[in-house]
Length: 233
Ligand code: ADP
Image 1 (cartoon, rainbow, N blue to C red):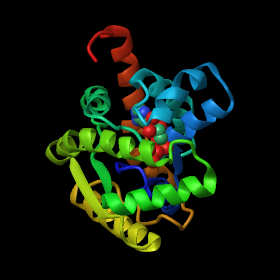
Image 2: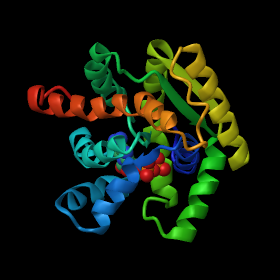
Image 3: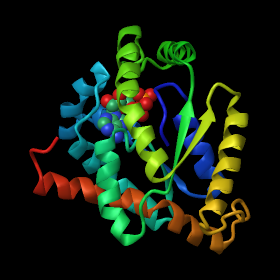
Image 4: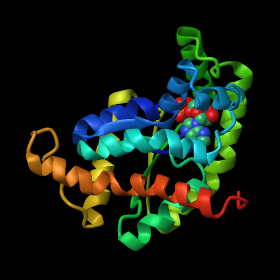
C-alpha cells in the first residue's frame, strides 16, 4: 500500500486485510510502539519520525521482520508503509523475483495536498501525534513526493500499479480498491480469493500465497544488503 501521509492508507489497509481475512502490518505503527516503549530502536528513530524524515532501511527491516513472519504464519497480511522508496522496493524484488514470489500488485491511494493537510491537522489536534504539526506535515508530504515518482514508476513498469482516488468517502475507497484488486488478480492469473469472508480454509491458503512472500522477501533482501553491501545507500 503506497500513499502520502493522510491519504487513509492505514484505515484502508485494515479494511482490505479484513476483507481478505489477513493481517494488517504497519511500519509506522511499529516504529511508534518502539518510541513509546523507549526501546533502543525507539530512541534512535524518534528524531527521524519527529522531523518527518524516513527511518533508515535496516531499522525498518528489523522492526518488520518478526511481526510479518508471525502474520505470514497466521495466513498473510497487508503491508502498510513499506516499501517507501525504490531502494526498499528493489531489495524486495531482488530476493523475491528468482523465487517467483515478487510483488505483483501495488495499490496507490492518491489524494490532493490541501485535503491531506486538512486531515493531518485534524488528526494532530485529536490525537496529539507529534508529527502531525503544520511544519512537519509539509516536510512529510515533500519526502513522499520526492520518493513517490520513482516508486510508482517502478511498480508501473515492473508490476501492476492500481491507483485509487483517496478523496472519496471511506467505504467507497475500500470498495473501489477491492474491485480493482480482484480484477488485477484475475488478469494476472493469480489464485481466486473471491471466497474471502466465507471463512473457508481455501481462503487462508490462497491469501498466504498472494500476500506473504513478497514482504517476507523484502526484509530478507534488506537484511542481505545491509550485511553484504553496506556502503551502497
Ligand atoms: P504517514 O505515512 O502518515 O507519514 P506512517 O505511520 O506510515 O505515517 O509513518 C510515520 C513515519 O514513520 C514516517 O514519517 C517515517 O519517519 C517512518 N516510516 C514508516 N515507514 C517507513 C519506511 N518503510 N521507511 C522509512 N521510514 C518509515
